[in-house]
Length: 183
Image 1 (cartoon, rainbow, N blue to C red):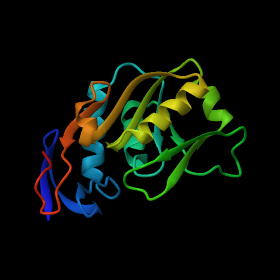
Image 2: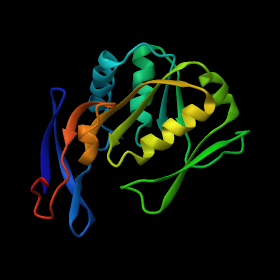
Image 3: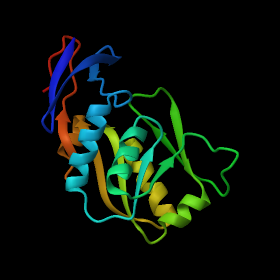
């Protein structure tokens, strides 16, 4: 089963994948889809306010953050899933994502926190669903002293579709096991 989508003028058929016995989601993956990554970055940048840094959670949003950075010439930062040996003074937030089983951690180090302090930050992600990853990203940016000027994603699904604080290119419904969108 697939779901046909128009994402700011670019068409894709998203495979439907089970989350549990009553819920399916449309699988949107930027990895390897260069055309969509370039297109989505361009469209989000058109809607972005002035900013100093882009930050994204590891890993599926990395191509989007990179491409937005490449097109705008503005540096991007990553919230990693685990602290790395080169990181010092780690800021850590726990998150429960709909697409990842179990609790996750997102971390940044003091070097990235210093860059963000007092700066205008755009948070980007591929898809916003429950909003938990976004909440964790906001917490990290706030701990670092950054000023969040925009929260952006290619797609929003479920309750996130109705959030006025998020800029998205298209809504993505949640699905019943038979492939029909949930009411």
